Length: 431
Image (cartoon, rainbow, N blue to C red; front, side, top):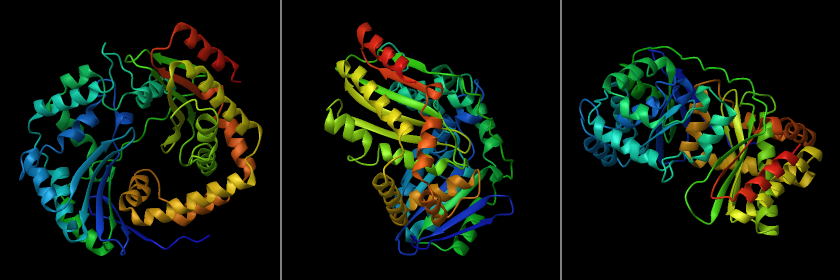
């Protein structure tokens, strides 16, 4: 099964900035992305949340455009929109543009990354504190299940910290903190520029030299190794807001993208949740009607990750929902998938890779974000690794990952003491 050819070229500026170009000449749009090796994983407890605060501040203006309004208007006048995101192990700055204004868009991104103005810190602080309110209940208690799960999977480790950090830190950070963090992490060696779409590598290299040559070289910051696994299962519960439903998260700590078994984990995920005819939705929704929303997914990093299953259901349905999810997981460990399931997962993975040829942002993530940590494999290499996965590989990985020692079960909802006891009993039965 051959994929359509795509040209991915790489180069470096004299200051050490790696430049990746994904040439997609059939597209009329271009996505310009800067990936920085910084996020909550690289923060101490006292700096927790600083990467996220800095990400917000870089959109507050530049030396030439010293306000958020002026900067956003300049980008929007080019037909683009600014987007940024702080992850656990990276930060992303992205502008999607028409092909004809890609050059000017890259120049603006260069201004953001080399000449930040750090204006109106107090206004941005209020915005961030408002954003953080989304994770709190009426008592001010954290009810963000993803964050609670991470804290339980990686206790006392930077990976377990909230990306936004604690409120006390956000209230304390000042301009000196922001400039220190910027100077420490935003060096050319610690970044990757990826331009994806209707562009040529030679022109991207020239634009990058013009826009980003002023970046200091800096240094590549090493990751803090994940802590040893603390044997589970662990249980996290928050009462949350009053309402008729509980949110459930069953999560497992898993291996990272460079593990030889990572392709089998991709296939395993698709067996459980890749449409409404796969096992999770079919059993929980179509057959039993236990939930309206159910899904599964993975947050993968270079050396570790989380595989999690989520659902929202009425309080009374939660114990049965937990038991049914555990039943699906046991079956994956006990029996290999059918040839039909395996074939479907492979075909749909291939079709998703084909679809990525029309999605410059997806291509940038596949090749730009990856390049922060290791040489990105080609799309054909990714496909061939998944095609090589056997039913026995999937079963072996299910036995390795879907086990109680690596599990955290989280719930947010007003569960009665009886229902909470029934959930705990279902956890105790999962072996």
